[in-house]
Length: 159
Image (cartoon, rainbow, N blue to C red; front, side, top):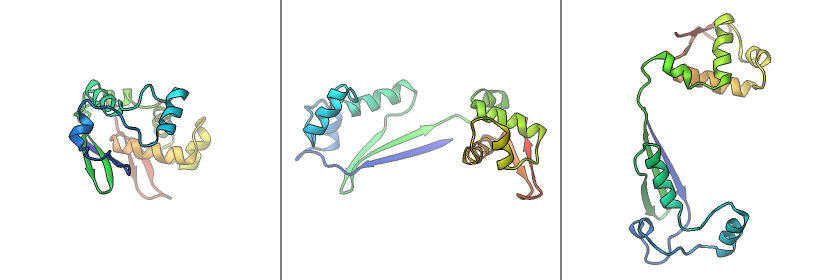
């Protein structure tokens, strides 16, 4: 499965800077030093000017490719490209499920005709929106299939 995430920051680079300057070793010039200092003193950032480096290192440490950086009239773009191997077995997939998703699968094995409302009322700490999200996620993972329509259909769990 391939996923692409693009984030744009409407900010501007200092005069004469390029993406290459940003990616190389350089001195930081915070756009608003007062805000940068406030975040630094509050402990929200350890130092300014290291975020690009930290993003690249985090991607490498997690086995992902280095993000692409682009600068144009709309701002500074960071483009992440993730490739996940397809899951081969249900056993491996079910090991990565949340407790709520596992509970929903168990519940739907016993009550395949259950509605989202019935699921949310039967399982602890989950709203109807949470049920909707997790049903969609379980379908994406190939662990759950909807057979028929809303009123007369049922949920088929896939082993």
